[in-house]
Length: 599
Ligand SMILES: Cc1cc2nc3c(=O)[nH]c(=O)nc-3n(C[C@H](O)[C@H](O)[C@H](O)COP(=O)(O)OP(=O)(O)OC[C@H]3O[C@@H](n4cnc5c(N)ncnc54)[C@H](O)[C@@H]3O)c2cc1C
Image (cartoon, rainbow, N blue to C red):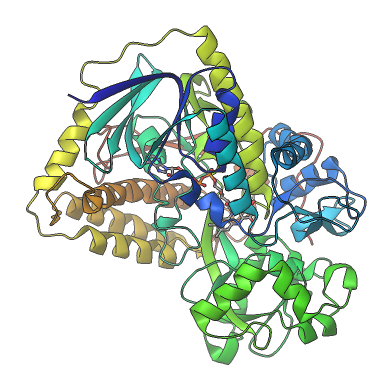
């Protein structure tokens, strides 16, 4: 029999969103965090560039400018009341982190130092503004360490290296989750009054990605497998500057410090595309322009990459350093220690002496589990699912719309993680424990047993590799109908083959092969939701750029996409060929009228 645990609030995931939620929930109710990774290994720890807040420590700034930039950056698909919450609360949230002891970089006067980042501007688009608060290029690492310490201090109960495979629902309410203890293979049931999903992104549906190996969308798939919708899945962000072929991220902070993009003809091509902010335009646009340069034969040596140049002499030649100041090699080394090291380690070149080959890399899911501004998960009719909350990259509030601005995810984690923790705790205080269905783990157990003992002919790693190549090639920076039809046919084929897998490890202890196979099933579901939503949206907006529909169409498409599945078990991929249900939700507009984006 599985072990049963009982907590008022259970949080799935120990990244920035999960830990912030845990910290706030644990102030008033019993709280557990269930995480497949040891908390400080979560991907938040890889965040480099910074966290946005209009502190105005370096130059004039205001939360209203931040709100506007977020909405414009998201190509007007952002819910404007949510963007207001993000931009307003960012200031207080960063100060809360500061008071917890987060070691931010400081100005000589002792204020939090800030730097420029793509799409963040002063006075509604006039010029780049310094809004990103940072700890060198290790901001996420510092956030994660700080929050984890605070959670320990607050006696949050941690279940580290527990893999959540399913949600437990009772009469339409969420009453807990089913998890596998990775060390033993034993099943655990977490019975809760409220559950916060904070499981991060799913970049591993792509081949070239900045995301960690673990970002496989399991809990997003769990929500979807319980018949709930996912929102705006077609909007996946490609970050312009991944290390060529490897996808490892070279933060936008590099361009914030003055680095420029150069094509094969030696031109700073962003001057033509975005004359005001140049290399600091939003990511969706820069990724599309890089691809356009490459397609026009202007990649370096005619190849499929361009250069990012952060040599001080180049930065000074273009006067692209912060505030047009002269930049030295020491300054670059001090402000970008990790990413300059990544270039040395992974490419074997010194970025202070040579330009670095880069290409767009799959980076961030704007879409995910739909929620309201209090992180309550919404069903296909827009009603809150009792007891179920979501925050962080897995959620779609939606503050990022069709394209997220750099440094706005870390803000999202702390602002909505905090709201999620508080809302889930409030709910738990007034609600009774729902009843557990008989054998809530039955479907997970059956699926794991089947995978463990199957003697099929397919290797899960092969299926994963084929999925990733398909998504990168056919549902990447540019998309078209034919390519996406092909991608969906391939996903259906991979689903068939998934039912014929074989693994070698039939044991229970640390069976990572088994869990990785389960993850492949989740990737297939999340990729299908992404490709199907992308095929349906016949316009180009933000990160969704269609060759066959190159224009944005506010008349037809100024609305969110909802997609859900109609059939299947709680622990298995949607059957190949099953019909998906689509719906729409209006975008909540406000004071900023949708306009054409110019930078
Ligand atoms: C290389 C890189 C650099 C970035 N730099 C920046 C930046 O400078 N600024 C910025 O704003 N954003 C940045 N981002 C984006 C940002 O870091 C992420 O969007 C954000 O950290 C996600 O946080 P999260 O709390 O939602 O999830 P994560 O930090 O990814 O944590 C997910 C958690 O969920 C748990 N989990 C997942 N699946 C399961 C399961 N099945 N069972 C149990 N637990 C599970 C994991 O164990 C983990 O604890 C960057 C992203 C990357 C990849």
